[in-house]
Length: 263
Image 1 (cartoon, helix red, strand yellow):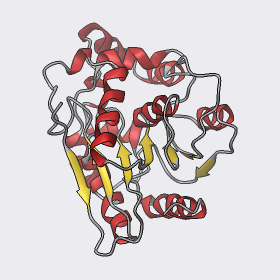
Image 2: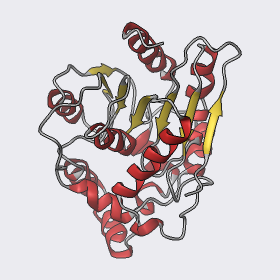
Image 3: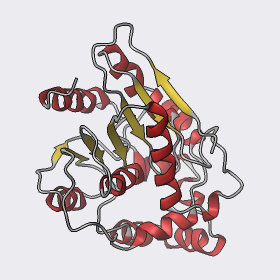
Image 4: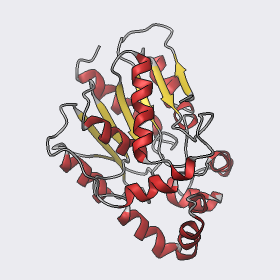
């Protein structure tokens, strides 16, 4: 599979372990390249982000509707093989769930979940959206298309961003949102089957207090599942890597990785 991989190299490579960022629904590698990739490169890391198949410039757009989460997991495995070194993994939203699945059978130096889909699935989030926008969700299910959920700037702001995001930034980001796999959405609705054994990989679980897509309770459930404590960022919405407070999130990730002694 030909996958888009965006890489930022540091001027001085202070660490040999790369960081691989995995995006969520409707996004692609671009969402990490806005702030996180250059910032982590400035701090001495090789920072990489992939576009999952059917996203960005990756192959697979024609079959996207029927692409399963398992195929997205194949993409992450492929990129890690190409890197040749086990990276620190950072997954956002659906990307966080993909990271969780990867850790069921693999070990990496560390992993970070940002506003991740909970092991309990997307049903609570879907029901919240249905109460606000029943017609839009009905349209999505009748057309087997997830795009109606983010098809306008106002919908993107409600689900992904803070209310006070500047209009020009909202317009730029919403214009880059794309269709997502309906099959993957169905895969994520119900609680996922997972190994009863907790991952050996150290996990940092971060969430946003004003997240309309993944609630504080769901972030806490994810952390509880993996025997750790959640850390919440106030005045922040779902797209933590694009929100005004992105650097606070990045700094927390950096500090935590470095506290693990990862070289």
